Length: 423
Image (cartoon, rainbow, N blue to C red; front, side):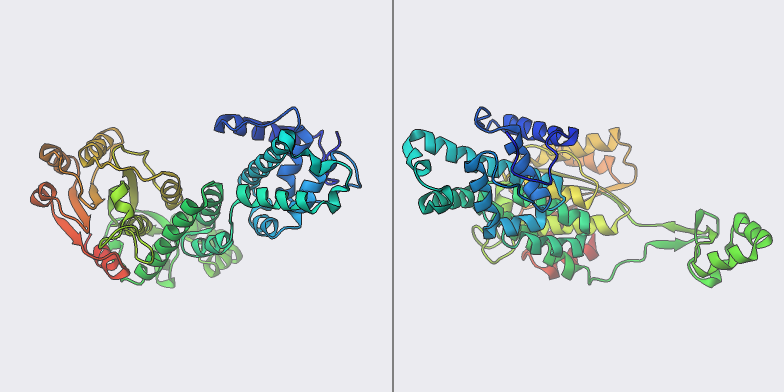
């Protein structure tokens, strides 16, 4: 059959590849798709109406599919989704999968006896069919309100890449109540970080008398430390030297050392961390996991090098940048148990295998684990330059007896600033 869109080359190799990836994605998720009724052209349409502005052909092809697309593209849901999916492959693929699930469900309902919708009446005039299509679209596409607003907020604080990643992950979650909960966590996290950034940052550069490297000109007083290469430019081309001087791109000998700390963070994301400090599930109050993740991100932004692992009853893969932190926070579901001993053992093993010399270990948890092994804590003290614990709304006698501990009794910007100052 011929596809519904004029601005798609259905025979193009890239189009065929995207169709293949969507089919494999369905198979990987274990979602049945009626490939005998849903052609490659239909799959391509589902992707490209999200990826670019659609241009419809004249009345050709599968009339039911065309009517389904027309109904969808004139809906408010499509307008909201297209604003964030345009020229975004991952979002367009996720949207295509959801749209195809809705269409697949429509075909199933028709075959089970509701086929009277399509008989003896122009599909464009069939209000019952239009109502059914809109209901399926709302069910499968979900609510996407405020995702774009949240993306901009995250991008402003944490960077465009992190904002884009957050939007993709939030849209990809099928269960709307959980997606709304994740969005609330992320919004609170960004607000915490924004307010905590007001804290006075320590000086990271320490002046030394010996040359420690090469850097770029900062102030004109640095001219006395220009490199031999910069001197050669001055001798050979005064014009080039003047340009590099004006743009502060001259190389100078650096006599300062970066004294920012290197950190290894263990962040608890067990089920109890998704509660507030005072009472059950948070509504307007900040959850413990939000505060913990905000602290981790703030430390990651200000420290020299950071390795971080989430943990609950298992330990998750290490992350080294803010984008990966947000990705894991939004993808990993909260589990019930907490195994602090296993997390610390993993950190000790990492310190040896990854060569993490002079790193400080920081454990961020609510301390709800009665089986912490004191010997593992002692091993960690030998493996790391220092070990610190931050207990959020909880206590743990074993940890508090063996390592310096900061206890947090309120999850708010003030306690976050205080933690940053004292780590």
